[in-house]
Amino acid sequence: MTLNARSGLSRMAAPLAVLGSAVLMACTAGATGTGQPAATASSPVCEILTRSSGGMTIIEGVVTSPSALSGSYTLRVSGSGTNIRQGGDFAAAAGEKTMLGQVSLGGNARAYAIDLTVEAGGKTIPCNIRA
Image 1 (cartoon, rainbow, N blue to C red):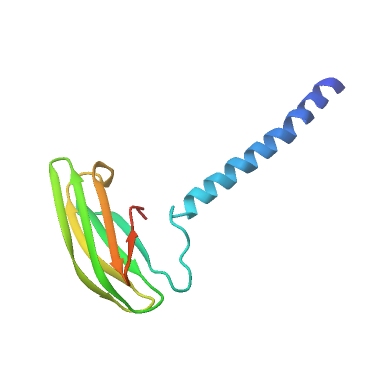
Image 2 (image 1 turned 180 degrees about the horizontal axis):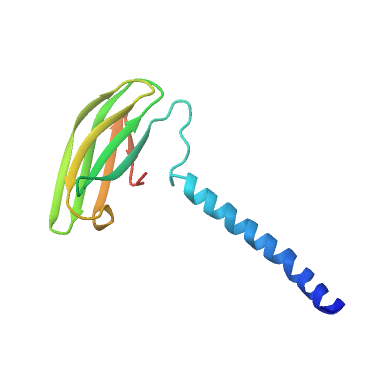
């Protein structure tokens, strides 16, 4: 290599290192983030959990709150000829994940539109983020 070729590589290495760091940070943020704001010490958080079991897709609505919480929920799942609506009242213990509703279906969870809404303490908490 000549001196000019090395200096050309050096000039390219710094921007590539910066680009690589930015990509790594974006991937890390996407892998750890839920798309919801972080819960404060007094705010409940709800999630839509999906998993596979025995060839079926299991969809669960879950709420977690730092303090005891009661209210109502609605879980809707639609798509691929499916239209399911579950709902009702719930009571959640402080600091524990409480399952609100569960649906078992065939196929991949991505094939379904899933919507979970939790109402508690006079507030509506939309929970459209899948965990």
